Length: 202
Image 1 (tube, rainbow, N blue to C red):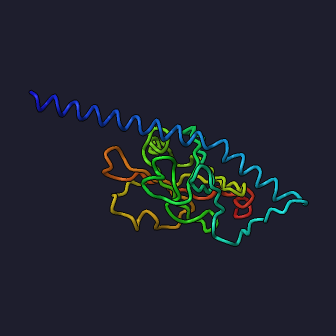
Image 2 (cartoon, one colour):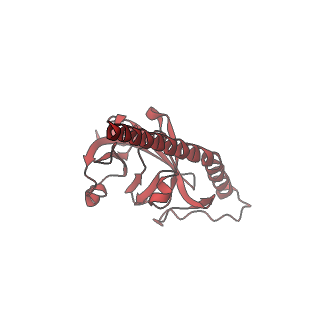
Image 3 (cartoon, rainbow, N blue to C red):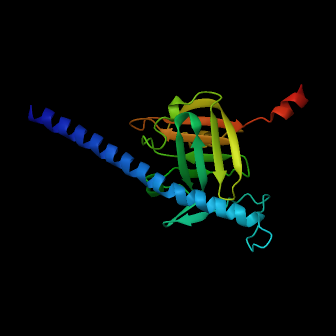
């Protein structure tokens, strides 16, 4: 009887802790979004201003532009319309950073192999599994370059499938762990096709 009560209280404590962590993470992400967007707008305006000393980004350089906000470096933000989700993306990935925002796991928009990871917090990637083939995903980098993608596949991978996570010819991959961390929900995306290109192909 006592053991059962202890186990129930332990489970409730874990649920409460996870809920609080998710709430804190969601608040942290939304707090940084206005400044992130402002920085992108300012950088874009400066790059188009003839009198500006701002350096125009080299689009042949695979390195993504980073901007530091509150001690963390960001490479842009992600927008998923069907989930009503708009989130900043940090430049590097580790457990500390994942507690605040989605992170670039590997790759770049400039090399067409960007991989973004996030915890399954309700304010981050908890609803990633709800995406369907054809859903739109938009990434805006710190230079104001907007990349639009369509979801083409949703996979479930094991935590040990690290090589598989970055394998394949996908322009963008999003992933998060399932509840309990037993597997990884993995969303594969490709750049949206230009309608004019499709017409030419026909």
